Image (cartoon, rainbow, N blue to C red; front, top):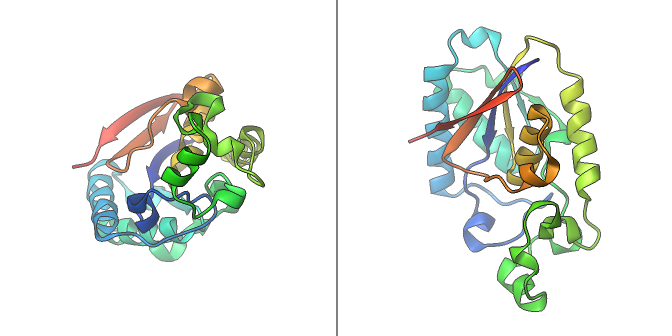
Length: 197
């Protein structure tokens, strides 16, 4: 199996404002940039031989920003980053950019749903869990045994990717968290959470 260090992008303006992002985008906040630097510092400690690690990122701007910062701090070659569309966040269709508070008022109880019932899979014009899982599984299936990758992705996509890697029940995987102060070492089918301070 490949070894993956999975990172979620740093805090964005829309994260702070409580807006739905999906394939929409907003820039990192100063806190988000600081989180990206902290990722880089932590990676510098855990990577060992940096030449053996390949960096792959979602092409959405918030991940591109995070990846550039963490590569600079960790001493990784940001000119060699691969951007893969399949690592993008779940598509939230017509709800992209809307305040979550507005959606909660319009759809009582929906925003509290967890697991496979999560509201992101109920967005009009959005992407289903199956569609998201299919594209992430395809990406994961193309990796070579023994490969070492630093991967920068998103909250929901990261939950699904970790679940696929570990062979976890999809509903349980969707109930896990999506931190911006930790990274996940995925090795030999197991996942270890590594705090970033």
